[in-house]
Amino acid sequence: MRRTAMALAASVSAVSLAACGVIDGVGGGSSSSTPKKGNDITVGLLLPETDNPRYEQFDRPIIERQVKSLTHDQGKVVSANAGADAAKQSQQLEQMIADKVDVLLVDAVDAKAIEPGVQKAKDAGIPVIAYDRLAQGPIDAYISFDNELVGQVQGRALVEKLGTKASGSTIVMMNGSPTDPNAAQFKTGALSELQDKVKIPKAGEFDTKDWKPENAKANMDKAIQAIGLGNIAGVYSANDGMAGAVIEALKDAGVTKMPPVTGQDAALDAVQRIISGEQYMSVYKSYPEEANNAAEMAVAKVQGRSIEFDALTRDKVDSPTTKNIPSMLVPVVALTTDNIKDTVIQDGIYTVKQICTDKYKAACAAAGLH
Image 1 (cartoon, rainbow, N blue to C red):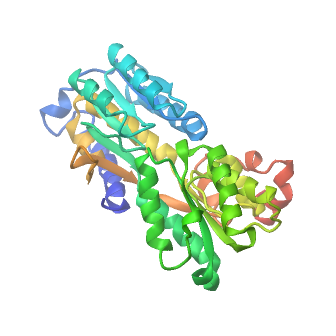
Image 2: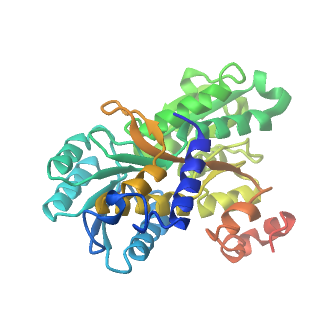
Image 3: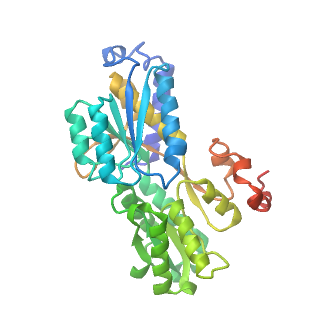
């Protein structure tokens, strides 16, 4: 994969095209001025789970608003959440094909299991855009964050926090679901920073089924028993839901001073844990940027606006089944107490009031959040 410079270039190019009037069909050739469909379109949105609150809290409503805006309130989004059930998601996809949606945004529970459904959609003439996770099958485009970079940011942060003690330190590695291709990319990125810098015993490395916090907690309990509580210097956790479970397991085992624990997604409770010092860091991914661009890609694709679509997808990635998929990779930021104001608050993800509840008021004051 090319890195985030290409994703940023795609965003800039799309804005430039809009400013020149090309996207609205004023220039740029017949493909822009003669869309395949008008504004009365239906976007099917398949979301993977509810354990991570981002999908229902941010992604879905942002995509709904953006589709309405781009279609002058004539287009709509129909959505379904699979609740981490791959078979259920396949049924939801088939129902959307039967309902003849115009385009699909698919955030796969299981990238491989969804492949037959993606093929059915393609056979029915429905474009499929892989959203957030790279689905297998003949997808038309892909938008996500730079997932290897996410892992690198997490791994680097953990090593830097351990400092001069890193080389002799043992960490636990709590990876994501083995059915999610993003998890493999997070792991690859993290290991590029962790290998030869810290010790990761076999008894301390886990792939966590379905990303479920309860599975992460059970894994952490096993790690504590196998490695010994006093020997765990830090925990690489691939996301915030699992980080919360890891911290809970450490507390239950008697830890009073928490070792550094990583995360991802900048969930509200994780931001509060970072403020209070329980969790060291998370990775902030701009859901508004990802979701808004996904909606633009979907509308452009179904309306035949190839110039806009190409501007949004200047990168290329490969899946196990498809090569050179037009893609956008959105940049990410390491989130610590130092930049909460400049990230989740500045972008309107959370307000100070939401973060600084009574339980966290003293910690917020110490962090300069008022």
